[in-house]
Structure formats: C-alpha cells, structure tokens
Image (cartoon, rainbow, N blue to C red; front, side, top):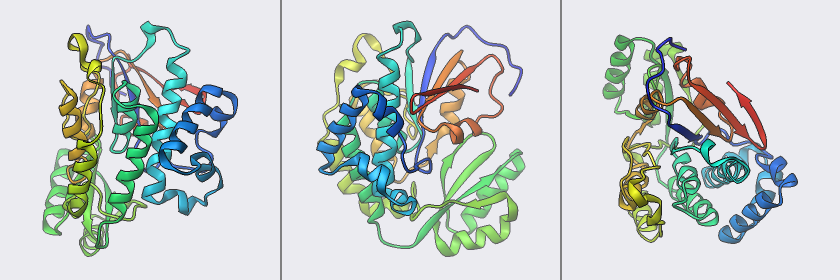
Length: 311
C-alpha cells in the first residue's frame, strides 16, 4: 500500500470479479441459509432453462470452467452476495458506484439496478456461449510489469507477435491476447514474467469479432432501467469505456465493447483511489492482488458467500 493521505472524497464503491474465480459450490452456502438468495437462483434457473445450482454443485471443475458455464455462475454468485448484503445494510453504508472486471460488468449492472437478476444471469450465459463459439485457437498471457520500461517492453513484444492488450489490470500487470503461435513466441521472449491463463480463447481481442454482431443484438434487445440515472446519478463505471455511464446507452456501449476491447481496470483503480472505502463481492482475491499498493486510508472488505473479510 502507499501512504497517500485521504482526500475529501467519501465515495464507497463495489467491485465484482471476472472469469477465473469460478469454483464448485460457489454461492451455495449463502443459498442454503438465505431464502432470498435461494429465490434469486430460482429466478436465474428459470431464465436459463436449467438448474443453475446443480450446475455449480455437480459439475467437474473442468466443466464449470467452460466459458458458457463460468460466466453465469460468477455473475449469479457475486451479484447474489451483493443483493443479500445490501438488503440487510443501512442505506448510508451502500456503495455509490459499481464496476466489474470483464463479465463482472453484468454483476455490476444487476447490483446498481439496471438489470433484473435472472435477466442479467441469462445475458451472462449468452455472452459465454458466443465467446466460446468463436473459431480459431487462441489464449491469453498475464505479464508482470513492475517498471514503465518493462511495460513498454511488453507492449513491443505484443506488437511483434500479433498480440493485443486484453486488460490493463493496474500498474503491475497487463494481459495479452491472441493466437497460439504468437503467445508461445511471447512466452519465450518474456520468460518468467509471463503466465499463461487457463482460458479457451483470446478474449478481449479481434479474435472475438465473429461473435460481435450477435452480441450487439443481444444488448440492443435488453431493457435497462433508466430510473437508475435519476437526479444525475451515475452509479455504473464501465470497465472497458473507463467512464461513468450517463444513461443506459452508455452502459450498452460498455457491454458491447467488452468482447473485443481491453479491460481498463487501471482506470477503475484510479477512480477508487479517491474513495474512502470499498467492497468486493464474490471471490475478491484476484482483484485485491491487482491493487496491493492501494492507499492506506482505504478500507476494502471482501464479501463472499455470506462471509466478510476486511483486507
């Protein structure tokens, strides 16, 4: 953490994780003890046309990691964690803005009231299906960049091997995405600073372009609640647009961008640095590690499956 003193901001934020945090049984402890959460998962199952808790509980880790399964499971469990916590919290403790990493953007949209729970989870399933159906072999590579020079070098290597930046995860990490041959060459060059991610495709890159039209149609057909923006409120921070949406069209544009454009988590972290407290709903370990040098004054709590841990 750094020692920058707090500013005048009193904002509270809520973050939601992206793909990679899925695990068998996620959210099921909370479901078992909270009838409200059980009803949320019932709504999701009805929207999906199959039993989502059964998928989460009975699948192998390999099956749950498939994009079309992981994305609705992550959105459902993290958004349910937020909604269950929020209904028992005082109004003055609720977050003032929301952001999610990649698929976590749909969790954020549910949490700030833009999307009904079942509809948001169904949209996550459809997103996963479209992304998983794109042709071609590709993957992703996380690269540690501890200095500006290392960051510039990683970008040069990406360009040389036909890779794209899929995510700016903060001051210490970027993620590259692209074809397998380019990734192998990049790993040979980068060495121990690069870690292959356990994903099936080159997400957040031009290799997702074949799915873009169908995804745009899904977003266009999705009704969002415009009342969320009443009285000038701007609760949704886009993870790809890197700006606070001023209306529903701004949210749709961010969701559309997410297939082929990079996640700008560095911009989300910058905005959060002006706040005094924040929450991560769902498995927050990865998001917390992305911001190890956060200001000392900033209190972050991870709320996952009914358990709260202050970092």
